[in-house]
Image 1 (tube, one colour):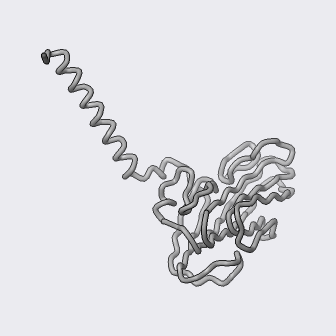
Image 2: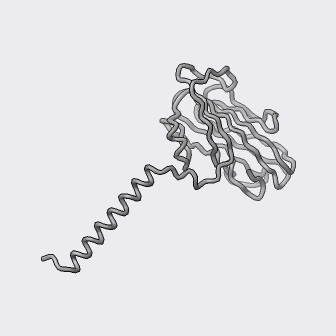
Image 3: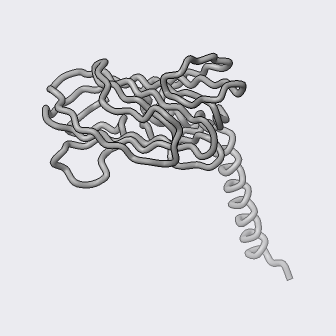
Length: 196
């Protein structure tokens, strides 16, 4: 028999289910990218009629997208480029044959030797203050490259060119003081060493 207490409990459960359902819908529909401080400018250019084999090849761009992102953290994915938490990247639906040009301004707080770690599936080239620091020009499976550079205190400009030809996508870019252990910090993550 349905009494007043059971009726209130069932209404309360129904209300909780409605609230949870709406929260899920809002999470899927609303772009929460505004919650993150985005200070790295990136230009995505793609052309499905072109096969990209080299990071420095001539481009015939059909589509160009400009975004600001918070960190260079695009984990390994078999289907398309995705960011760890920025939904606007997934909405671009970048899968094959695209370039990504990153323009990064950094402020070095602590002068010293820094190690830069780039993990990519396909090619890249990294420039610091217009000087080439490291590159892998061709297509490849997932690999990690490291390079060390002395950075003076103050402002510096980094440019990273990345391309994805076919297959899985991945681009992760980290930094750390040379003497520090661990995986490092994603480019874009402010620390006591470097700010963005």
